[in-house]
Image (cartoon, rainbow, N blue to C red; front, side, top):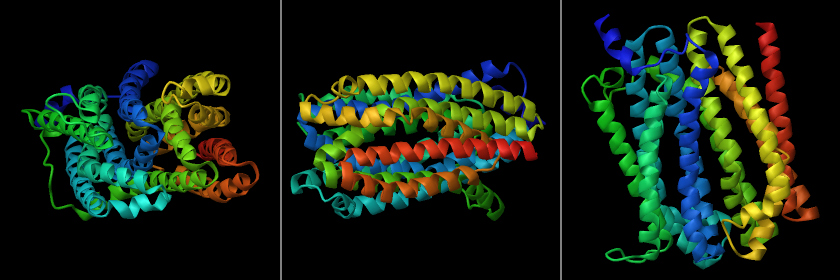
Length: 451
């Protein structure tokens, strides 16, 4: 009992109180974190864009790999969010501490393995895109520095999941804000040089990101290790217990597999785009994907909040509250989806020109945003429904839908690309998004009626 009391000030009970207020209180910091993570890349692209669209293509190709690494890190992050949220909902803070130790150990081990692989063999990955030799060399140098931060990324996402599962999404927000501020300051200094910093170009952007993420990790560790820290100063590194490890993998692996596969598909789509659109195809997808992050990150923030909210209420046998939260989230995301669709369809070229000034590049990018604009509402429907499934601990259905329709994107992109050029690749993404959002939502409604 004494241990439980010690945790009370540091966790948030989501099973009581106003649903809309609690949902938005949890979601807004998560949205801000998502936008900050997007801002890391946008800040890099804004500065690197001044070096030329070829440098943007180099960074964009590596950005897709980092997306894949963040997806792998979801094994521990999602495992932490759901297992800790359900433990707190069941009034078992001692169990929440055990899960926190396990997810942290898993995150560290995975981060070290992947970081070492890409540090030692950066050219093996970069060669996948068949880029010009100069762009490939630039991308490999960027990747070698960024790979040093892969273990840091894994730990940051894991610690964020621990706080989110505890209902404290505000803490990751503050720490990520500090990291973004560091990145904004360091980017121009290291990319273009200013006494005493030498001009480093693309490598300067990677070093700025690495140092900024290091700051975020230090802030997390200091906060967790202070006296009476979250979940009782749990141990970071332990010998994993089979029971808890398997449960974490059961919760996190489907989500991670879905996102890793999604990233892999997008890497292949980028390669197809380079076939039909040259380096402008990769530039359009890399910058356009960052712009599209407006809807992606907003939806993901509310989806993650919904998952944590549902996890606690599901464990407390309060499914009526969980379903009401789902309805609120659908209404908010639907309204935003309509606004973004109108903006992308009608103002795509103007939006894209803010990030790259070459006319040929922003015309190609405007075409990307216009076509992807028609899918925004359905993408938000899919992500929101996924949050509901995750909170229930049923992470497999969203993975099945995502993997199946994302796989279809490759042959569809090749088929359409051969007939209408690089625009066919973008239409393949939009068409499959329509199916993913609709079918996953229908799946949840069917499951709800049965139960």
